[in-house]
Image (cartoon, rainbow, N blue to C red; front, side, top):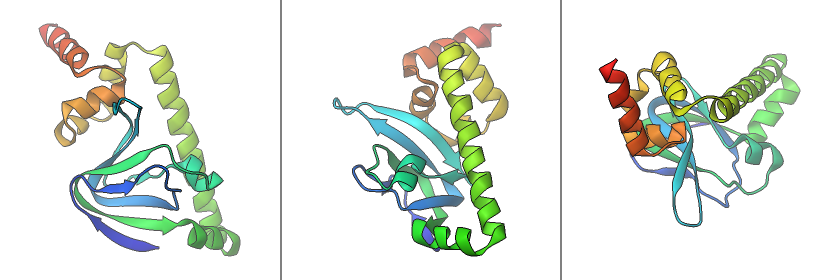
Length: 166
């Protein structure tokens, strides 16, 4: 376990690195994203203080990551490295339970995110984000929010304009 400070725009994970940590964000905000062959970035997660971020697939499988993790603003995180964390899982009931809870949260969050992208309209996704994470609109640039919602910045602007008229 270690504490790291990061500057705005700093890359915490870059493909094809293998993700060897789960980060608990103490302050600041970060995002995980995918970049395609045309260098188009698509945000998978937006996270801030008191939340976790990792590439859990790479962390578990120890295969190269396909995700980038980048700080959006200056901050600090506690990094739980894989070796130390697995040792704690084996030697402590508390940490074993912690690992199970983290895994369950990752599963639930992934399932909800997948269902939102598959089954909700862009307007419904926007309204849900506004309801559950209104602070995102102060923390993150609109281009990051649009990418997270799976839409273009222009579509986000249209949705916001339509909703402000009602």
